[in-house]
Amino acid sequence: MQKLRSAPHVKAVCDVTIAYARLTPHGMVLFQRPPRFSETVLTPRLDERWKFFVHVERYPLSELPETDEALALWLEDRWLDKGQRLEGLRQRLAKGFLWTDMSPSS
Image (cartoon, rainbow, N blue to C red; front, side, top):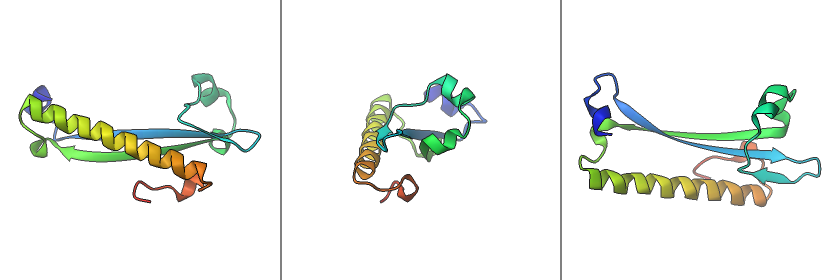
């Protein structure tokens, strides 16, 4: 991170969370099992079987902690947030919410 700060073209970092869900022929939702590469290339209408949730947060480098120790704690908090976000999505899917009803705040 310290090297990124010295790069004049880098102004921010992004935290990206990607969740996958697949509807089986029996109507069951499989959560967090990504499609195989061959499926992404060979499956017609992949969007009818697979749903993707992408959450992106942008953090300006100027707002990040300066020390390595503080930055490590900040990164740990991002991992905790990511885990809570994914667990919340999993629970909502298990309760029968439609994938299109998902949002990070719901």
